Length: 441
Image (tube, rainbow, N blue to C red; front, side, top):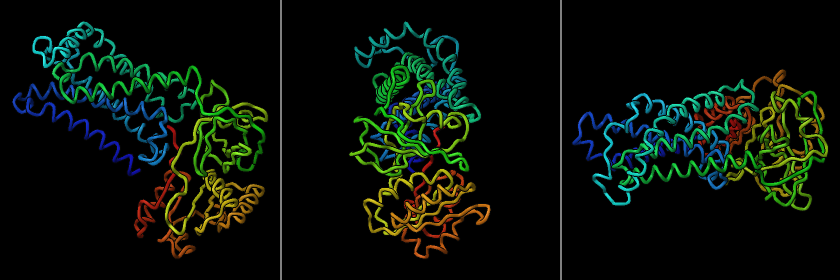
């Protein structure tokens, strides 16, 4: 979480700094009217910049995962940028003149060109001022509705997935609005160049999103080869055979799986180690409503699926001699994958695994115990009806040298945040508490 906070604040501060360096001297001499005009401009620039960055994150660029600590954190940043960009867009709209003319304070580079090219471009764009004003407000209102659909989680994922693609089209209209109505003087300054670059990146990301949605995406085609349902848990464990398009994965990572185009891609944590010889990949998923309520139909034997990934930085890689794993409910999945890896390739780390659950399947628990024994992992199973809620003091008591460990948590976000706070307050370095934030909305 710390990295995405730094990313959000750092990105915003960078845009403001470039703007101020470009316009600071003019503002100092321009008085209140100049500040008012520039405020309208900077809110618009920040809005389109945040939306562009959010668009880039939405196409799941794996090369950004190391710096932002995994796709799960990137999606949280995507959400913050979307909300921030929308809020600034509303503020920009409220402060703009809205009278169909170029924004107050705009000067013509054609009359006073910093460069001949910039002046000619501004002259050409000026013919579209009216159109750019006209599309800005409707596009903003559409975006408000689309973001509301994304944030209101009672709205089915299927509807969210189908409508969220319209964000790209709304962004294209707002990008047109921003470029055409950007203050003429900016075209010859760093803030103008930066805005154009970010807008171009956002448009490119939007085109990729549309291409994937209408023409298909994914890394590899696969076929369901087995599925086992645990009725007590409402959980399905399934295995798929993937073709040569799958690059392999590490335990703890996840993938987006598409079984039906109309449903779109859904994220599932990978539950198996990777073996290039058999090319099988497994998932453990819980029926939670909407798409997952039909898991058994979606993953019927022989059914084809497209898999995109792998994603995530929850890969158990660190230099600590001890690890403490905490898997709450379906959050046990990445640890199952890691145990299966350790059973084949053991390491010298001492591991304690805590599994806290309200539902019980003796078959599933027996498999987990077998996996733990094969991986030489010390397993602690806590049934909430009998053992109560897992808390930090219980772990401190079980693992006296916990300060030498790293903690890996996957489960409800609030539960993980409480444990993190307790561990850090007692002396664990925050960088040694790893939490998977498996929320895509």
